[in-house]
Length: 389
Image (cartoon, rainbow, N blue to C red; front, side):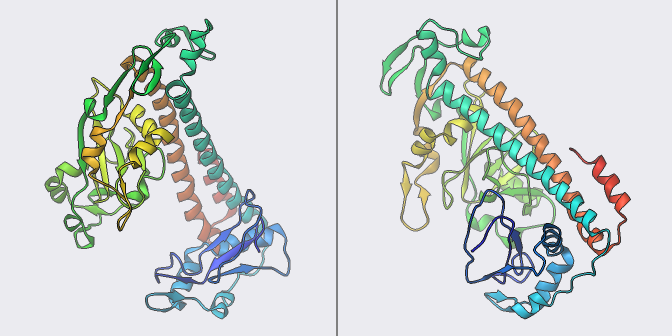
């Protein structure tokens, strides 16, 4: 059994590149208990003090340790690291500075965790606002009672009606229309056939490929990519996306919906074969509103209603189906007001992501040098002071 703070490591995996074999993790404080699988080991120490546990945790995240595991892994399709080799990894002798080394690394980790928590809170606030305005219709209900919507300025409140009317979707705010996605879509496009993008076409630098791993959050994640050449991307122009496009997954991890933000790292991306996208006609709609709609329970229900369970889970005829989805569309001034608020949240999310990236790079740079003693503590402390708080 595992408890908060326990360390555990994986001794089996599918590759021998060091990304899996020997990987170590620490049970976070919000997970009260857990259980080991047959391919993992739990680390118990003669001295179970926080400093020792933390030091070993950071030691087992160094590049030197990853190389050690990769060099001793055996097997082909499934590779493994023996318990003997795992336990034989040499631990540097304890020094008087070890406590401060651990403290520095933990401080960086805490900063990263706080930024991630802040981002999660910001996302939940924007999602709650969308639900209040466009699902529960709180401003309309409040005005219907002759009251002023709470926490809303007069100019924004004036955009909402004070009564409902019957529609094909039931009671809806008066003056809001029901229409298909096609009525506000400038373009809906698919990723290319799999034969057009494969490992043999990848290059070290070029146009990045967006796949499902980049669509786990509200905004497309700019982490590691595979790339194709600009010439290749030009041939796949119909599958290229840019800032403002809303990207969906139609096969595999269906239901993923992310917005490509204006502050994205690259000016152009190309989709992989399991993704498709919507580009809004900006005279009719805003991509921020569309993103939140299709991430809402109602939007997800509609998106997945055309799901096929034969083979890999998929959305049948994704482009045609998305265009046909009918939904309640507020007047553009209300959409604009929401999108403006949402974008201010998104800008903070993107800034926090950049800070996380900076801190992660700093941590990964300092880690092996601090553990090995190649970097003096005053230098490391100075670098941390310059990093974002």
